[in-house]
Amino acid sequence: MTFKLVTDSCCDLPYTLLEENDVDFISMTVHLNGKEMIDDLGKTFDYDHFLKEIQNGGMPTTSQVNIGQYIEFFRTFIEKKIPVLYLAFSSGLSGSYQSALQAVDILKEEYEDVEIYIVDTKAASLGLGLLVNKAIDLKKAGHSLEDILLWLTENKMNVQSWVTVDDLKHLERGGRISKTAAAIGGLMNVKPIITIDAEGKLINVGKVRGRGKALQKLANETTSRIIEPVKQTIYIAYAGDLDNAEKLKKMILEKIQVKEISIFPLGSTITSHTGYGCIAVFSLGEKRV
Image (cartoon, rainbow, N blue to C red; front, side, top):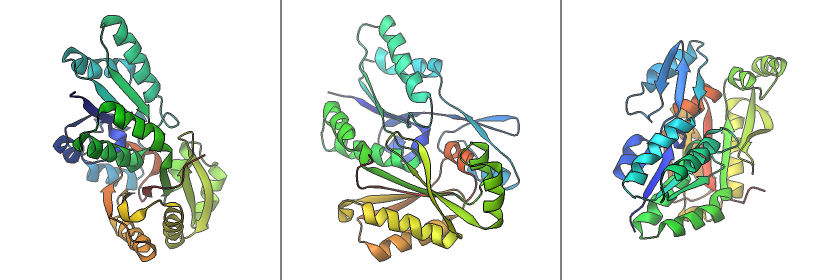
């Protein structure tokens, strides 16, 4: 049976990759300097200009997808009688997942046959992207919607996410650290180590002095927890700092042999909350508990 894989712009995969694999997505909205921009994964979004604005002190905010947007997005598939499997941004980081559930409930009052299955991936950025790519591979291999849904349910908690940021102001604004801690951390060149927990929330799990040590910590955490690395593609996301993304890739390859390491820009929605210079790495590893 034909079905559609869909996701949202927080997967941080290039729109071209999604288009090539017949995956639709719904976009978050970014607000910066009085302007509203649609995070369409680089299709029209001027990412380089966005990064320059952040470097110049811009502090973007984001809007989650609302119920009305989800209703119109899903309605297209319902009217064409196409079942949908939606891999959603973590409910621990956004209310979009709950909005999607409410939209489906409303649509079920309007239509008799609504086949929309929503997965709270408990993941963000290329952690979500990793799951989307796995779903694409399974679909290409002939697996059913039910098969893919089962795989996601059984394996989504194995997504390991390790993150460091270069600018503490964005974490301060988001309430992750205090203003005092941000000021002291900036003066002492402290770099936080962040992961995504079992609830799909960002948690600060450590701090180191200097960028190099932060990257090494990300490499160590990834390689010590990874499962069957020779069969895996590891994903690295970066906000403007490609050189250090490449350094992290090299650090990982010095420790383990993997199938592939793919590097993509960190999406504008996530970058709005982490700032310029954020580096993140994603793999399948030990189950989050």
